[in-house]
Image (cartoon, rainbow, N blue to C red; front, side, top):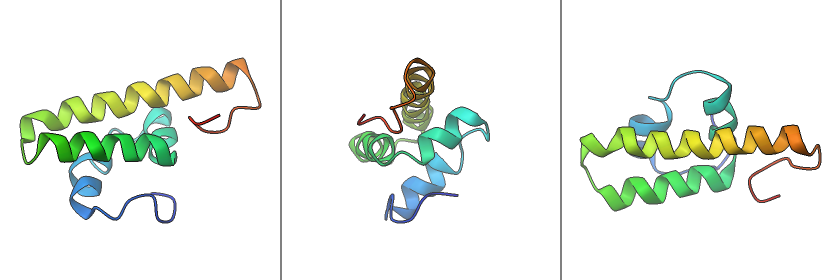
Length: 82
């Protein structure tokens, strides 16, 4: 489901990315390397606190939603870095 080499953290992938809703926002979020790395840093910062997983997923989705909105504004934007 992820692009190649986006994350090597299998627990992050299982607990966060694979647990996200299967919609356009999560599709875009999972394929943006910077969004995934941001989410992974939040995940590592929260440790093994399962009650924080929802927060991490929410922040990833917020960035994905922002990226989708930015793409509507400009066709030159392909990822969050643009």
